[in-house]
Amino acid sequence: MQPSRQIAPSPYRFAERMSYIEVSAIREILKVTERPDIISFAGGMPAPELFPVDAMARAQAQVYAGNGQAAMQYSTTEGWLPLRQWIAARLRKFGIDSSPDSVLITSGSQQGIDLVAKVFLDKGDWVAVENPSYLAALQTFGAYQAKVAAVDSDEFGIRIDALEKVLAQRRPKLIYLTPEFQNPTGITLSRERRDELIKVSRRYGAPILEDNPYGELRYSGQAITPLASRDKDGLVIYISTFSKTISPGVRIGWVNAAPEIMKALVTAKQSSDLHTSTVMQHAVARMLMDFDYDGQVRHISSVYGARCNAMLEALQSHFPAVAKWTKPEGGMFVWVELPPSVRAEQLLDRALDQGVAFVPGAPFFAEAPRHNFMRLNFSNCSPEVISEGIKRLGNCLSSIM
Image (cartoon, rainbow, N blue to C red):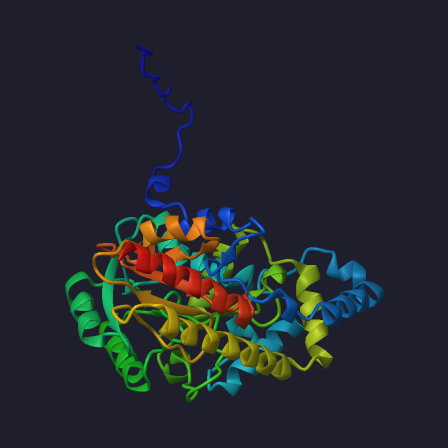
């Protein structure tokens, strides 16, 4: 009989905060989807064929030819002024009170979440989040050893009555949510609840972190103005990104916030990375000078809308009637509720054998994970591939049931 192997203790003394950070289930699954035979509904990947590669290449060439030395130099933490001017003007179109001084350029919107958490949260502080919620935001709050209060949501978004109970009982220092085409559910917060949320935030003095990476990708329904456009008290911190409309590879996001918050964010960013890539800021600003950005957004929305419809039609055709799913008006995700007896993790094992990947829903729940949910991404597959992938998934689900 072989003696059992003893696992040696780690010689490294990692920070306590590392024990609060969960490994991303999405990133682990994406390792599997690198196989060329896999139809992947797992990642939140924009469609690469829609990236404005030629326009970006021209812009970079123009930057290097006309102002290359400045673009390759250190820059201010706040960000390249022409880019902040463009973003502020864009935000004003949505009714948000913005100026270049209220805009901070970040390395993707994920850094915006991290910086806000850094300046607001101490160990043991509460953060109120919609449940389910964006997985990477939950990771970030865990990194600062915050406690997460999960607030139930329904088809109209976060429930304000449940949120007010959390605010009264736990006094969270921050409210985090994605009002437009939420990740993972695809749900949009209703106009009525937005107004209620602003009132509740004001009543309890609780800042709102409005994460809006998908807001421009609407392909049906009526547009709703952001929470930040309703804010008169400087309590809404608005973050967004070019990752879904230009490219995630440029790593350009931004935060729009009140002056006192902005000052703290700039100080926090100085200790993180000094400033976002100067070269990419110059290139994006140069491209936007003569690029049809609105046309780009319309084109992406048209393509994603067709892919979303293909997924919804395939789900209707190939999934059993006991399954339910959201019908998003934009964004990149469909959220599927399976019968209570089915675990999405078990379904994933069978699906991978059939060449299909998705993300089980349990990691998105901030409290009491529920295992009969799954997130499907439709933005990075053609309608034909989507139909085939959902057909395979439906067969796997039927075999389990």
